[in-house]
Image (cartoon, rainbow, N blue to C red; front, top):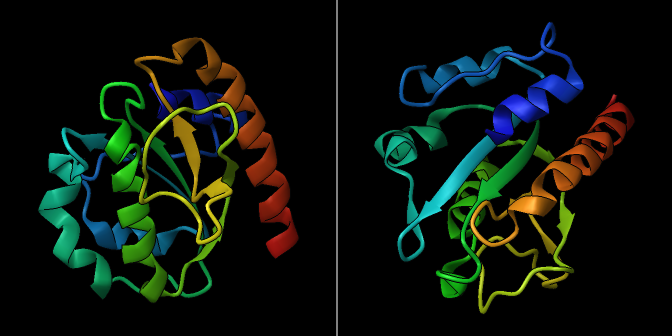
Length: 157
């Protein structure tokens, strides 16, 4: 899984992994850096676990917190909604005061539309992973992105 790969690169002794299904969303306020992962289901829908806590997100204060997102989707099978859930999460977290890092170039992807693109359309709002049609690129993308977010995080300090 992507979360475990990210943890292993950064260091298992300094990264805690939580499942949003089992952990109160208020736990986010205990960390300075949050790396949040979300997958897009079906036709641009939220993963059920995130959907269950969605209404609670706006009540969490993430002022002075740095957030990096990664998303999973299928650009070939669901190219009209590629990584929409990541874009929706980004938009939902914006009003909480979070500072975002880890935007990712959209070159090398083939999709029709995505809510996860920045305003100018040149980047995703986080790491874009496609375990269905570009599985062979995931490890390299994760390694590059982790290096990128660690540099960007240091620049926020």
